[in-house]
Amino acid sequence: MKIAQRMENLSPSVTMAITALGRELKAQGRDILSFSAGEPDFDTPDVVKNAAIKAIKDGFTKYTAVEGITETKQAIIKKLKKDHGLNYEPAHIVISNGAKHSLFNLCQVLIEEADEVIIPAPYWVTYPEQVKFSGGVPVFIETDDSSDFKITAKQLKEAITPKTKAMILNTPSNPSGAVYSREELEEIAEVLKGTDILVWSDEMYEKIMYDGKEFTAAASISEDMYQRTITINGLSKAVAMTGWRFGYIATPKVEIVKAMTKLQGQVTSNINSITQHAAIPALQGDADADIEMMRKEFEKRRNIAVESFNAIKGLSCVSPQGAFYLFVNIKEISSDSMKFAADLLEEKGVAVVPGLAFGMEGYFRFSFATDLVSIQEGIKRIKDFIEK
Image (cartoon, rainbow, N blue to C red; front, side):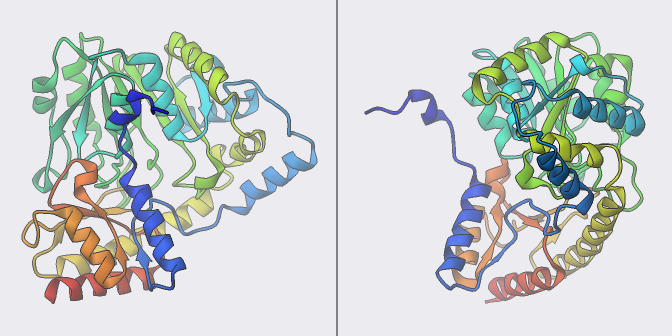
């Protein structure tokens, strides 16, 4: 038996692999502290759980419309209007099995052989893999600490070619926590004017912002950006609903929605009917107090972790404005982030994700979406590892 050739071009998720290895070592009795997975340590808010229980008791356990039930789509529409002043209709929304599934569907229906997709680096590990799997070509724009890991309008302009089909924006960013300001997004929008380039704006971490900063949705910049932007979002991170698998896209381009619905209808059909009902209170603001409680705790952890890492000789990290990751610079210590991460796990039982997985050597990603005691112990072990 021969596995299909297209699978040869698809790399496994390094974050998932390291998370799995950490769990395996822990099961073997090793003392493992894992900072590899982007998963809040908080439980899903009760208001969401209760909505799910009610849905089960009320018998909402059957197939639904492929692209999602009307009630949940209306909740998404109201949320986007309330938070960002954006106007959408039910025909503009597709609900999928997490934002990763939304992105996969998007790639499959839009990317053809040799189409180029601009991806700022560091990037979420899944972006280039899904583009390549769809026959497209990832075009990377490099950033670093000095730019807070954000691209400039000038860099974007230089990366555009006649083959450019789309660009991916991830704000706040996984893995760097970088957040694009309204002014920065306006400059990007100016470069894109007059082109047919689509903006795929992954806004999964929009509710996890720090230092009093306000989040700006890409589609809210201008009418031109609204028309070209496909917003990708979900509830996994901000509402601690990773296992529920709820993601969605919003775009005024109905033809994209129809194509994604057609594809999803032949692959997964609707997402879990219970999850769709459970998502409604989270989307309409009933879990906002829980979200704010988690955000405040993440900010507290961030402050302690950033200060602790920057106190270690040879390490440095930019304080992220959003999400719950630190992208730690190890260039003074090692030029091989894969070996650094492997040795750290073996010698100190600390799991982090090498920067190479995100397209940038000389860094590692450290998730602070776990308890403060573990964070402090993990950083202590990293300090010991470097000093010895």
